[in-house]
Amino acid sequence: MTTTFYDHWREAPKAAWRWPNFSPAEIACRGTGKLLINEPALDKLQALRDQLGKPLIVRSAYRSPEHNRTVGGATRSKHMDGAAFDIAMANHDPVAFEAAAREVGFLGFGFYPRSGFIHVDLGPARQWGERFPVRATAFAAETPPAREVLADSRTMKGGGAAGVATLGAAGVEVAQQVLAETQSAVLPLVPYLDTLRWVFIVVALGGIAVTIYARLDDWRRGRR
Image 1 (cartoon, rainbow, N blue to C red):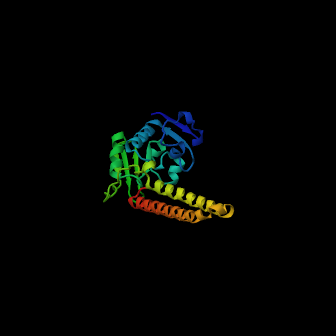
Image 2 (cartoon, helix red, strand yellow):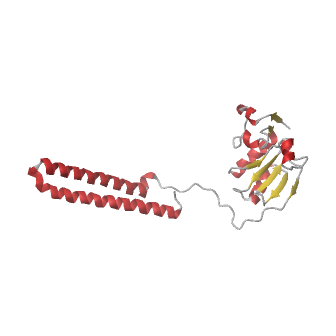
Image 3 (cartoon, one colour):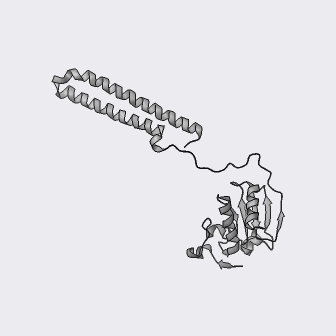
């Protein structure tokens, strides 16, 4: 068994750490910061993470002997060998987790439904505790939320129309003021500009309405 010990997890060289979904701080002793790298155990932990395809929340990994005594751990706990991990079930189906853990090679299992975690270790093969109750509804498959293509987005179209119309209305108002103040010969055009300004305002309000409707509709569909 290949193991390496460090007085503190910060001493572990980054170049030698080869488990991408975990950090030395996650695996180190929670009470002392000491770190025992058990390579076969960490290989299985990474394989389990890869198999499940979602984060593993490590509640406890390596425990120094003094910290193991403090928390009331077993006198021969596999945690002291760096060969055991307590994994929270907050984001996992316990049944699927157990099956995957057995498949990658974990042999020891402890079930703690009241505390919300499962203990796994390298063996010997054994188990204790009552299994988690079967969930009424299994975890849904994780899929990325559907999103509109930006060019087809109703929100973008509505917002764009509102923006263009607002600028148009403002431009007409400025032109109207300039003509009224400096061009007395074209005063007959002013009423038409006033009408055009109101047309732009109506279009702007319509664009805002489309934007609000699109956002509410997407929210109802769970699209963010």
